[in-house]
Length: 127
Image (cartoon, rainbow, N blue to C red; front, side):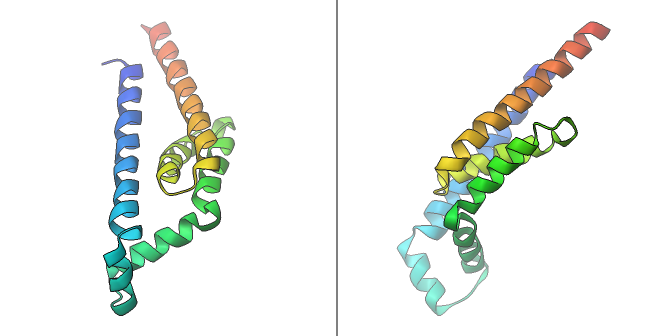
């Protein structure tokens, strides 16, 4: 399998994992009416995750984090932040932070695609 295909597969799998987790947080913890009532009576791990999720997307903090990570990923030595921008951006799209998350996802994807193309070109020149 070429490096480019491996990179695409990694992007798809990480994106699907982030999407799945964000959907679970949104629909099983945040929007579920029974969970809100339960958390007023009992404080357990699910309630802690729910409260943390609500704090994270309040004032679009998750979206701004993803956008900052994607912008910093433009600096060549900070390309690892593109992954943070990609994953947090996808989660932000689901968790009510779509305005800053949408450009973050696109920017992170462009950085990761450019990185994959450069590594693919480098491996092709060595062959």
